[in-house]
Length: 174
Image (cartoon, rainbow, N blue to C red; front, top):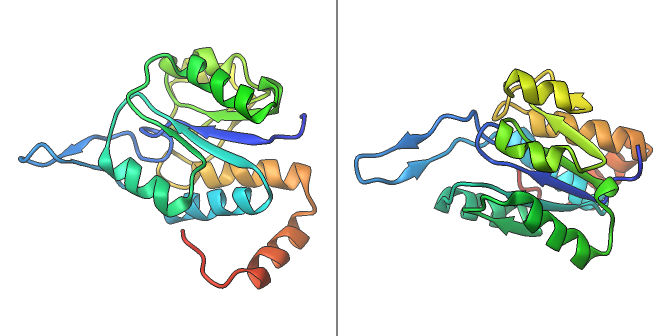
């Protein structure tokens, strides 16, 4: 695996369980897993940029992205690959230095182009056949953390990275 410099995430089915919770007022609710948040924080600490590219738009995603200091957030996007190409151009990296985590067929155009395509265990079967890594965990249940840890363990002395992170941090957002 080439060194990953950008981790891009879908939201529904990846950072969440894929269910849409809507109140009678039309407000959309999403449940995020704190362990995924810690994984994103670890990736950022290691110098890996983070992004969200999702087809839906949600204030919950906006709020969670700000909490986690996600570098790039694009919502309401149907041509996800075009947006990713803009990001990699800005960062001056190749698609082979990108990990994308997706769970459904609308993620295939990106999954087929990046260096490290990954999916949570609840991804549709066809997507799971197309990626290099399938987490044992489901979206919204720690799959993102698992995928990020697999990257960090491959690219870094993971124990040293964790020690540096733990003893160098005062406040950690999960």
